[in-house]
Length: 432
Image: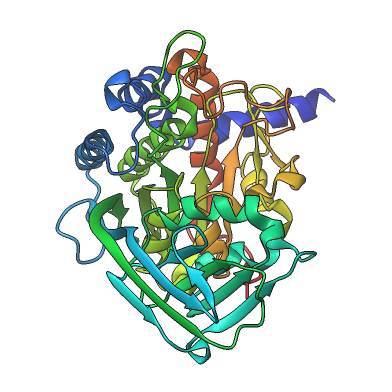
């Protein structure tokens, strides 16, 4: 028994001694420094299209530069900029057979300035009858790359009303249009619809840094987290209206920045490492979607997405879970590399929450990449979940910085055989 204990002690010591710089590079003081900047009141919750979100991006880019990371692809900076279009209807008029169409019964999801719908044959028609499942039929149409006409029975009026918020959100430029009409006429013979929109183009930016690989430079390992949050909202009981997003997800973004600095000091990666702070996760994952389109997914060997690691997991300190653990071998590889340490990864204990497809790993995972999220967030049903989730109280004072530091170290050490090329996780089954 003494021999076994001695062996484990030596192994544990070896795990950390092989990376002598880790404590000097990833330590509570440095973690707190970065976290404090990102979650400060001055950042005003890092809302979409806000000057403060741009300020956060500039800060992250500056840290990438200090760490010596290179630019991604043909970029001439760390900022990966793309356009989003936001539309709002100025005028909606027309008929569906003899029924008048206007802003009270028509919602249009488009990025075009004008729309003229004169023929039903130009659209794929979806009928949402009184007893149909609205979420299965109508909601997915917003992500469709088709021209669609969705006819919705008035029995779904409450759900229909919520669609207008989705239509008003910013989206990628697209040639496709989805028209939602609230009507009892689910089998029309003719349509004559005219729409004039007010259109606004706005810019967003991911922040991306790279450490080129050596023998396997065309194989990529991605470390990512989102740096946006939800801005300023309804005041709480303390009259605090700034949703700081310290845990969600300044914590994950801090981890990505620390890992970039650490691995660039180590310089032992055979595969190319990409570090990305995503924008717009809270608004539809647009940053991750755009980023994934700049890569060949077959060249991405693994993605570690880091989301909300500032609080203890359900198992206490020195632990975290991996979403979609059973969907690839990545979790097993990460845990194997921590053998003998005090840290442990666990499978996602909240399968009902479908967390695997609710963060920025989703886009690459859908393309077959072993892309998983590491988190400690307690996502049980109320009242057992994170008490500060999407609240003004999500501030740095609620975080366990020491434990967060250990999680970042564990991610660094557990991924070593993946970045070296020794281990390659199995692929995730692609989504249709």
